[in-house]
Image (cartoon, rainbow, N blue to C red; front, top):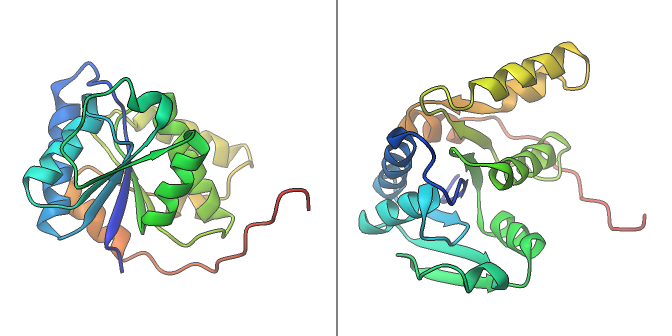
Length: 192
């Protein structure tokens, strides 16, 4: 059962108002379902929009931000702010506190966080579902690229099929809830 969703998204607003609108809709849908939002802790762009909308609609909002970035952002609307030492610790805490992962529009940081969560699911290090909220075709080039990776033999079709992509927040969350469980393998320790 999903009670906490980690959202990876941009600290910028992007070039289309649709990105902020989708973030706001997603935040409201999390609150409507009684789900907690775990996110990067910023107050700007898509990141700020999803947090503000979830918080104002009554959701618990947990931000996790590295100390270096904390000094650069204003306090956001949230229930709890966790300040960590670096990006690795940020991602570890996000994984620890979340039952599912969703990518909204963003840049390289969003992609890096999303790919790590999806890779770990594909490798069986966790069974938490991973999804993408499609917004006006933003993720279509990535989908095309991933189809090419499958065709080139570097990604199993079952892993691509396991990635949930929807353009409606409610449909996305429902699909994540209904994913069948995966076998989980213990993550190897460093140096072994």
